[in-house]
Amino acid sequence: MYYENKNIASRINEIASNIAKSNAVNPWELINKIYDDEVEPKINSKSKHKKFNSYHNSLNLAFLLLNEENVFSEIFWKSYAQTYQVSNNLFIDDMGVDDIKNIIVSLEKESKKNKSLELTLSKFKNFISQNGLLRTFSKTQIEFTPTLTQWKGFGALALLNDDDESLNPIIDHGKSIITKMIFNIYGLRVISGLGTESYFHEKISNKDINFLIKNNLLKKASKKHKDRLEELTYIEFNNSFNWDTNYIELKLDEFLKQINFRGDIEDPIEGKIGFYGIFESVMKEYFDNDEELARGWGNTLESVISHSIDTLDTLIRSREYLFFDQLFFKEFVTEDTLASVAGLSNPNSVKNAINNGEIETFSGKSIIKDAEGQPAKNSAINWALDKKRKYVVHEPIDEKPEKDIDYKYLSGEIIKARQAIEKSKKKSVIFNDNDMFARTDKEIFGRVADHNKRRWEWIGKGKTFKELNAKNSTYRECIDRKTYKKHTSPITQDILYDLNSGYIKQIK
Image (cartoon, rainbow, N blue to C red; front, side, top):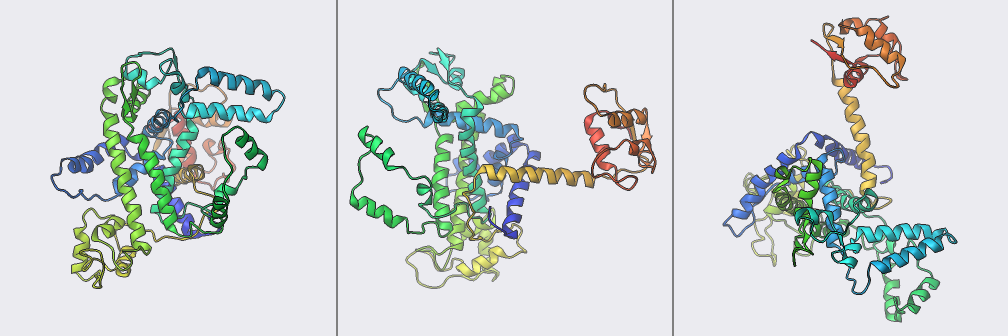
């Protein structure tokens, strides 16, 4: 994806490993911790200035959001996608369910003659579902499941579909936003090619343009606009991290729009709840409709996610101020900016470093008030990148990926990281000669390999690790794997496999 670059590969592996390891984190405890330690003090603060927080908790929450093996992550992304369906509706004045039905019927009929229309029909159905347009078209005739849960089922004649096929593209889009944000924090580029390149991968044909013009959906562009477009194609927009940063900030605004969506309640029939209510409805589905358990989590999570994304957004912008020349920040950075990048919990630590002579200060002229005495940029960069520092600061690597980075790419790296972690766990377990193992009461049934069955039954009421590990033991004779070399291979991973299967147990 980034050609051959060991430093980039190492950082991606670090990101993927942190996501895989986040399974050990209790998400509900982390959310409460962020709320109690960071959100609530800021809300209750009488100070005009925002309370300063380090980014670590927020980044850990971002890792959790991308962990597909975590139940919290599942609940969050389903809630996010369903909120997107409700909040992102397009303005439609005179189109109704009958019109949708007529379009679908026509496409189905014509697709029998033209197979390419089958894909168009599928995309059209997804478009309707992903944008929640059936609800818009039908008013209260077709309702939204979480709304019904929150508003006692008023006005429901049919429910909007929330199947994976329609929700997954929205979820992948949201996960890709978080992925790009994390990559940027790790000093990696996320956008490939020219800034305008994506507009020209598939050019619209003149035939298509004429069709749309005849149907009053387009009008011909003036020479002025055509010339401007031609000019733009020769401009290298994203020649630095600045383009990536601006792009990510725009996407984070889109992401937060869903989290902060509060809905509107014009009347009990047309009630439209926000993310907070949708999250609690989905959470109840996952926890046996336990209403008491889910109550309040939606509002808490909305505050925590908003705070964490703002914290990481500040980090992204601070990194840009530190590492790249800015119009007003070419020679210095603020203490807050440097503290944010360095992962500190208090900007006073930067002031202490200045007082101790670790960081030089800016002494020139600037139109920025109070610039004098702030950290000089080059000195601040050297201090932040010092390997002796507690938290690693990733220096930007200005190499573009072959394709825009998205979650699909990262998910493959996460799978590799999980496999590596599992492999290391197997190697780290050490059994002593006197450790005892015995057959459990679990019944052996189904398609169980004969060699597995034989070694479980041989263990019987008890065998020591020394007996299992003996040169010609029945246990060794009944191991069948490609990497096993008779008599010389360790059998730790085989014992762990048997323990995890539940057919044997360690008794002392």
